[in-house]
Structures are given as structure tokens and as C-alpha cells.
Length: 141
Image (cartoon, rainbow, N blue to C red; front, top):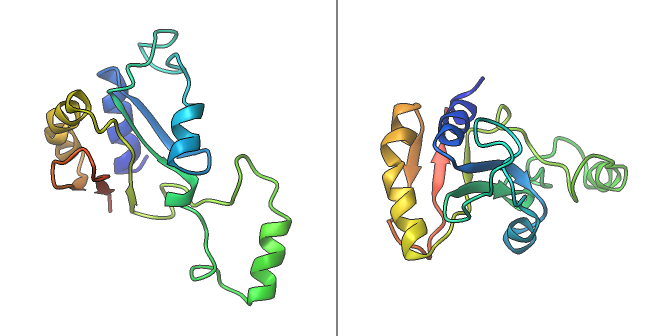
């Protein structure tokens, strides 16, 4: 279990919804989040959307610059992709940093600020200016 997975488990204990490679882009991902927690001690309870931390496929997708092979091989790879979601993505074991989505409202900002000590306790680093208009980047090497 990597440090991000440890962080996600810890946040779920606090009632947060955490997700990896949610559908497509930020708009699609927000629209597709579950209304109820699917795991943990809050399973079946309503998700508090001011306590969400997730990335989407575009944040962790395998792109042409990272692909080891020719452009034609990359195109073939994309055309033959049959996994979940809309594009192939890295797992949190394959990369060690990503940008994340959260609720940028005043309440969401305060909630994110409140969990910074938990993020750090789990061995992760957050890079964020404290503003609701900026998505935080979290690293977990």
C-alpha cells in the first residue's frame, strides 16, 4: 500500500470521499461521483461534497510523451484500450504525484486546510496556495 492509499484510507475514516482516475475531466468526474459512500465506516451514508478529494483520468493518463514506443504504436494502444473509463491511466503505484479536485467553496477550502496535517502525517506532501481556485498537487514518493 503506497502513501497515497494510506492517506485515502485515513481520510475515508474522517468521512471524506477519495477517488483515483475518476471519469474523464473535472466536470465529468464531479457529475459522476457517487451520492453515497461505497466503502469504509460511512458506507451507505451520503457523501458530503465539501469533503471530496479525487483526481480524474486526464490528471493521470498515459500520454504520448510518456509512452515507450512509436507514435503509431501509441495510436494503436489507444485504439485497442478496453479498460474502465475513457482513457488508459497510471495507477498510484506507477506515478508519485498528481493534481486533485476538491470543493473550492469557503467550506471546502476550510475542510482541505483542516486535513493538511493528516496529509503530512501519512507521508505525503501538498503543494497548494490555500485558494479555492487552485487545485492542490499531492506527492507520495
